[in-house]
Length: 536
Image 1 (cartoon, rainbow, N blue to C red):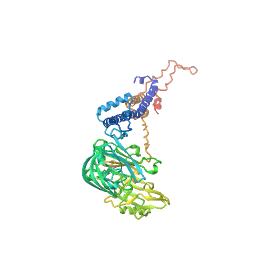
Image 2 (cartoon, rainbow, N blue to C red):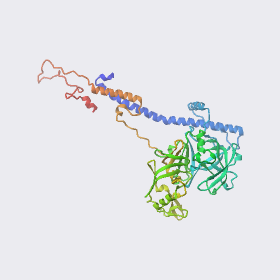
Image 3 (spheres, rainbow, N blue to C red):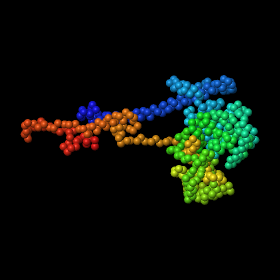
Image 4 (cartoon, one colour):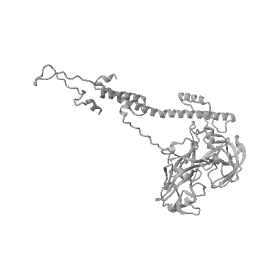
């Protein structure tokens, strides 16, 4: 306001203040963006330090109590120290809780730390077996006995074969006598699946699945049908407690109860072998807790659950070529390799696709002539989810050439219309959210991590005066002052004196030094001044 009355220098000051109001907030925003990754990296470094220190101290205590095994390295050599500043930060944060992080996994002899340390997510890597089965690792007992298991959202019980199981030879079997945390329960348990069955007793022990789950109840099976030739040892049920036999609490809910994850949600990403490089073992990822944004594209689209037993939801419309079915009831089942439809729906799909049927009612194309097949479109909550022929047709190569099979089979599935198995989950990253009673889907990332596009900064038309929208209070205040100066300069132009007539009338031949010349910033005779043309 001091410079507003100084005439000509006002324009220079207005330009200077305007540039300052625009550039300063932008620079401060850039500085914050550049420093944020460094601060995040420092926090993660401190988290890792705290977890590692707790894990190593636990190992040192175990070695002092039980003694060193032959060839075992003393755990004291595994201590890792941070710079002094971050070590002080770790000590302060450790004193606040005074408790070791619950998702640190103590496994001998290798030291394994899973999860992020803040209870947001616990990842469990999976292996891909020819796109038909996906396995993960789970440990039971103290010391831990490791098993290869299938994670099945179509059931709720967890079981592994017992050492007493005579039909389970060739598989890892649970020996209760070798576990110091084993608690016998003795209740009889019989499980029946679409293919196969298992019988045994309920047992209580410690389970390690991304973290230590205490007092977990599972099935110790004495007889398991169709185990010969299978790649897995047991099964982890991921459905709801309402369909669990024996009133057993599912493991994923026990993880939430014991604080390993902060919300009752998990998600599944499955790979396709065509996308894996030779020797790549990244077959999939089961994430307990917050979904992993590196495994899906765009945003997750949610639909409500119909009821809390299976992961059941409503499909508005199912369309395949000329065939359309409305009001489809579906469930998501990670334990089913293919899509499964009712008999009537399956026959209609076979007629549309024009494929041949085997004796076991498997739809196939002898020469893989599948280029003209239509897309399979499922509408969820008004949004189209599309499976292309590349997604729902399976290709098998033999000595006589390639044969293509439909990734769908028929079965008696009761009141359901379709079961969305691994064929669906490979295409769409699936989120199972029990806390909000909903199912989420997003396009899976074929080769993680996905690169999410960052939104372009929005440029406001008023940013010339007020700066960028995210510039902060300083830019807004200074911009407002500049705007006030501009408005004042326009509406209140400076008064200039009228030209003074001289006493003598100058002759035409003589110079006229006393005749006043109008200032460029004086009001124009037409009523508009040069200042208004400056704004224009």
